[in-house]
Image 1 (cartoon, helix red, strand yellow):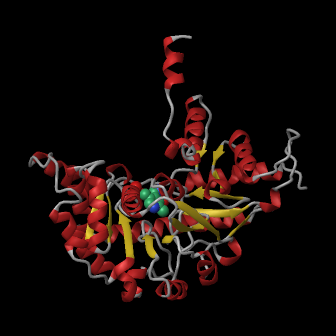
Image 2 (spheres, rainbow, N blue to C red):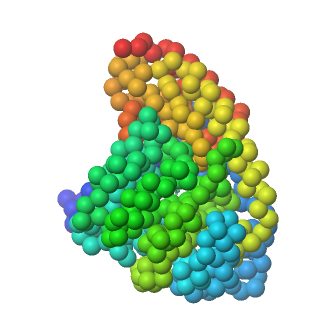
Length: 411
Ligand code: PMP
């Protein structure tokens, strides 16, 4: 046995992570990138980040913060200035009144979610998660010792949780319900009329808290009015965590700043988790996020209009392909299309497509378009396209998908 083998044999992962894997989205991205490096013209429609650049006034604010020497640890869960800007953001955009003590800032909304689950879940506590959902929800709950309870929401119900399904999923062990609107991966968003009956159910279950993930708030399309539960139902505000961030709205995924508003006791418990993990978010990124929140906001509507054009292009292109149907999403930059009409089809190479995973793998290989199968988000047979890329690239990708599908022999 070589020294390297001995070292490998000695490694034993903790039980808490032994059952988790690297995200399928990242694996597909890595495979597509490797194909590109090998010279193949792969179009990647898998990434969950805006393709435009961080606004220049935001970068400038970060440079100025560095020049002023703001390069040290900050207050544990956010600088007073950034927390004040977040209080103001919630007031201005959501009609929500939070105090500074009810605000937390972390290294991305992902860390906000992680802190919240670590701070509240005991072994066996249940978290209700409507699926399809962003894959991290499940694993964050598991790492924190909780039990994710999937509630399937199919395309026929607009991928949205119904009050009956919510009632049926609640048990004495339920601690949280997680809702995400507009949604990754479906782009579906909850209007006030969708939220109201769900909030009525929660009013009758005082032990259940609600985490709402509003990350895609600013990517909503015409005809849809964004709203958030803490503003809709003041009687529930004391057990709602309203999560948001700058990653998607301001194209700041790499800066790693997310935030939330919620009851002070919860916010304090989350700060305990953060104090023993990252200490504080990056000082420079906090200065940048402050500039994003306090600066001009007109770029948000301009970006949403860009995304809407791309959404229309992709939805029309997909619906023109026999065997694929795609609902028109209200927001975010994803389409989640049904490919049940292609399951069982025979490929020109002589194989059979039996799952959405196989469909996506076949398209990557033959059409050189990378997409993520619905299975990765908990609902099959579907596939997710992220249209945060140029219209030219989207047109080319649609042409390739369409030509590839035309070569399939239906079941
Ligand atoms: N929530 C949802 C629904 C997301 O899609 C993402 C990013 N993919 C996040 C939260 C996390 O965003 P960040 O950590 O960059 O703030």
